[in-house]
Amino acid sequence: MNVLILHGSYGKPFENWFPWLESELSKRNTPCLIPTFPTPEHQNYTAWKNLLDYYFNKGFINEETVVIGHSCGAAFAVKYILEKAVNIKALITVAGYNHFYSGDHMDQLNGSFYFNKDCGVNLKKWIPTRIAFYSSSDPFIPIEKLEEFSSIIQATPKAIPDAGHFNASAGYTTFHVLLEILNQL
Image: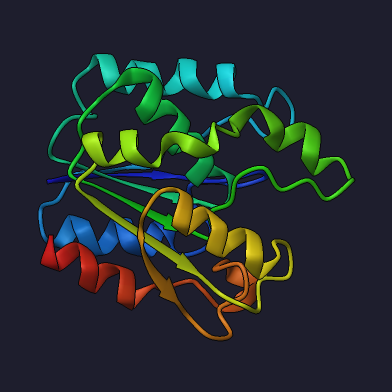
């Protein structure tokens, strides 16, 4: 198994629970990759896809890969997997959403990552295990959009109370429940 963590808008590989999870996986000799995507400048699907294509072409994304997408990184992951038609071991989304428009600058940043809502059946073909973490206390994304995302990708929902957006400002510098799930895969 190998793990690929995809951050969201304004995200970095060295923030939130990402470095902690990478360290925990390293202790288990599980390869973990957290690419640095351009954000907010040059943030769009094509730029992110071009970077991820490098790892895809090197064989890092395959049937043994667990992809973890945070925030808009979750929508990006789904769109990428569908476009590439690649089989992966599992998709775990954290505060993932699709087609959420807030009326501010985030709409322009995230809009190119959104995918067709009818992809669920196709997604099951490529990803046997799909899990979606979300919280009703997310300050950025309405609970309806988080639940809708879980439903669209036909994921097992994991509602965590008071988790906010699962970032450092919500206290998420570790993520033990996620690590437990990875240990079970």
